[in-house]
Length: 300
Image 1 (cartoon, rainbow, N blue to C red):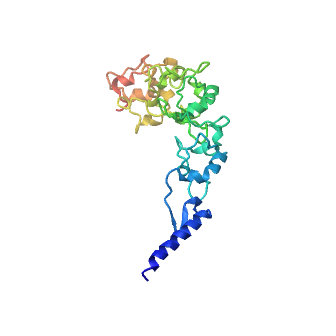
Image 2 (cartoon, helix red, strand yellow; image 1 turned 45 degrees about the vertical axis):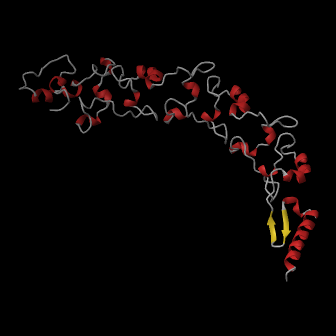
Image 3 (tube, rainbow, N blue to C red; image 1 turned 135 degrees about the vertical axis):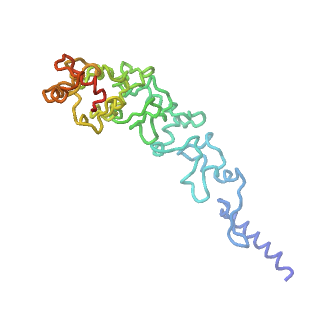
């Protein structure tokens, strides 16, 4: 019994040596007396056995460009799939690309390859016709994602591109050849002054220049709000269903404060009879707005 333990250890060592000689240790595994177990391979030891694999690798070529520490990218289960800590995440359309698409040359070059988008996509930036990019930043990911160039999102736009603005081409606001971006007005009125000036229903010259007071970005019509409710409320009154043009007569001008015509509806004989005892009520008047003298808010 006293000599069995040294003999057992010797047998185990002998089995390990035979296994290594037979090539079983190529992946760092040996048979010991206690069964199969992994041996921790020191950095660089893989290469001593797998130098032919390293030198023969073509996708991508490894010689002079990849480290000789095989475990940095490969596992003991199989060469493929290999993992590689890229300098930035390989996502979207980049996942289907061959390494040589970005790492060109024969052999392909890896050291010094640009890490920023424009380093690879300068030609896409320079050749973009919609819109011209020469005034845009070269940080592609500000508007584009890695799935596809389109649709692009103008993440850095000074105001939200929603409603009708979401489908308008950039060149509708950014005119010129090439289109001008820097200095483009950010307020609605500066772009829509022609719409404001030409509006016939009603004339806008007396209105606010803040388009969003009455309009949404979905469409000009229907327009909401904008009436001076604190002075002449329409909500909940008999005037709530009256069209703008029935009170604001374009023939009297385009200024909302001066083209009001009350007498079209309130100047008939019935009104005269109701007001016959009112000393201030004019029986005849050239003023279209004299009702407001006593009823400035439209109420009794």
